[in-house]
Length: 233
Image (cartoon, rainbow, N blue to C red; front, side):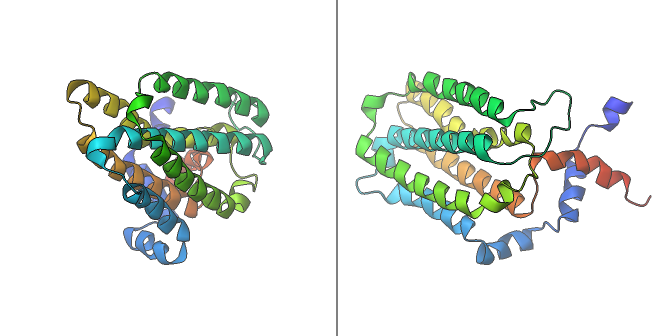
């Protein structure tokens, strides 16, 4: 019974978000006050308007750009795990040394990208466009990293949960990579799946940015049941 009561459902998450004053209207109003949203949208759209970019002919190039963005996100998070301040572990299974987590993350995260690189044809990509796209995403990543520096380095976050953040963020990127490889084998046309996954990727990044603006970390998830328990019956 105790294990069952500890499970978190969608209704629990919804109630918890409401305690943080989350709403659709608040989300859209935040676009005016938080430039990170504009930066995310601009960086994703800018890829489509790179000189010579044609998704029908260069969809593999898009996949490689996403791969480079994923690698850059990983590098930034290694530095964060190594240098940022984090809260003390609250679970017996947590690692107590953020630097040890950084080393584990470096090899674990890097291994996946090493494997992916063997399945995406590098000769089918335009590497001038790949480098330009990587520069755009890298610039956006640097800006938003500096914007979130004080909050992320406040000691509020649990390093073990913080390690999960890049995996959540790159989920749509890796879906583009995996499905892109699948479609290229059977149809040779990556454009349709890339269009869909570009929207999914941008949506995921905006959602995570909004959670971060609300001040929600993965360590806060343990408070969801507490919030529900303190509501008047």
